[in-house]
Structures are given as structure tokens and as C-alpha cells.
Image 1 (cartoon, rainbow, N blue to C red):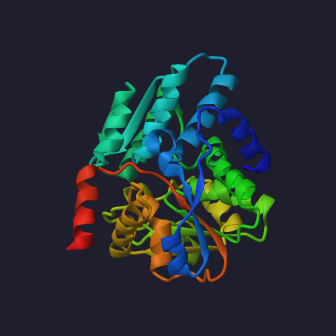
Image 2 (cartoon, helix red, strand yellow):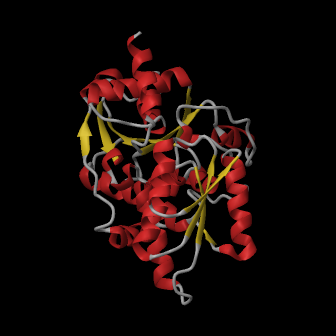
Length: 322
């Protein structure tokens, strides 16, 4: 289990390695929601995504607890976790092998390569996760899941601590959902400190395993399609710890389609003058789609990352004005 004390411990541990990111009001989304909407700017975080929080926390825990020296690490990633863990591993000399989906954004893959980590491309994210777990199980290193790992969840939860510290009267927090590590950590922190705050997750329609699993009352496999929100796609590890967390601390999950994700991404760039990747556009997309009753509420939207290929960004912006 991950509890509040694990998250507060992670906050102490990662201080100086992860930035305490600002919260900024969005006049654009406030008008769309008839609410007071603020953006949590993880887009300016180190490695340009929130993933550095969990990566640093996991590496420091291993460094402090391992009697075997600099043990090899293994992970699977859609890109951001791999880049963050590669950066963290390089700080303390951990050898790292990253299994990544072929076709992952070059901005993310190049960041992994730049650290000297070993990169192995796989058919897709689900295949990358299977191969990474098998590689670790064969004795080649310690597997650090991008979402189903207590230290990764606790690191992500430090965002919840920061939100409640800065916005003690927060009514709603909206979080993109891929593997569920981010919303699990934020939900645990927020519900412990501000039980009345509503925690809402947003999945991409092309990959919504939590929505389908919650409907079925058990973990199910979904057909995954291509999405601009590549960081949110892929099935859940059959052994994931996040489904239980989501059932406990998340009040609602909504699904957004590709057209709305693209419109939201272009809207963030044009209205907020921020670069975001597709996954980070999920929260704004849910607001623009009118799926949420937010009127007169104080709302925080987590902008999770900014690692988008320039060609994809150009295409989205060009389509928005055509």
C-alpha cells in the first residue's frame, strides 16, 4: 500500500531534484467551465514531465536500501518514464535498460539515448512491458514499472501535496490517466488532506482500460488504438497495484475522443502559450467537451508533460486553423 506518509517521505527525498511546479489560473478554461480553473504546470518540470518525481524517488530508495551497490535497473516506457528514469539513474550510476514501443515520440526516445541508457524497441507498449518484466525476472535487473510501483506512485503523489498546500479550498482535481500511477498518487494525497475534493481522471477513447475494468468489476484487456495521447495508451499490467488505488480514491473517470484531444492541445498552445503533449491535453479536453459539472468550483488541471514531436505539434496546430 501507499499512504500519505510515503508521499510526504517522497517529497523530502526528491527535494532539489524535482521542481515544485507553479499553479496558474487559466482564463480560457475558466470561461469554458464557468469555474475557477488553474493549471498545474508539470510541463516545466525536469525532463519536461511529472515522471521525474517517481523516478528519482525510486532510485533513491534503491540506493539507500541496496547492499549490492549500483544494481542494474529495467523498465518499460511509452517515453516519459524512460527518459525520467534514465536521467535519475545517470545521477547515481545505475545501469538502465529501457524497453520502449517502436514509434514512440522521437523527443522522448532521444532523451533516453542521451543519458547512455540501453534502449530496446518493441512492437508496442504492451510488448515492451512484457519483455521488460521478463528481462528483469531473468536476473538482469530490478524492474521499475512506470506506474505500478509504490515508489513511483508516491513520487507522483507529491503533486497532490503541492496542490493542497497552494489551493487549500480545492474542489476538483482533473488528472490524465494512462497506467494510473499519477492519479493514484494524487488521489491518495488529496483524499488524505482534503477528503471533500473530487478526483476526476481522463482516459483517451483509444485506450481506456480503467473505464472498461471498472464497468466489469475486474481488470480487463482492451483493444488499443493509435492516439495523440501516446503516453496514455496501453493495457494494464495484470499485476498492477493501481486499479485498487483508483477504486479507492478516484471519484469519476471520463473518456475523451481524438478530435477533442487535438482541439484541446491546440487550445493550450494558443491560449496558454505552453507546449504540451497529447496526454497533457486530456484534462482540458474533458472541460472543452462539457463532460463535467464544474460550475462555480475551484478546479486544478494537471498538465502532465511537454514531450511532443515537433512534426506532430505542427500538424495539430495547422489542422486547428485550417
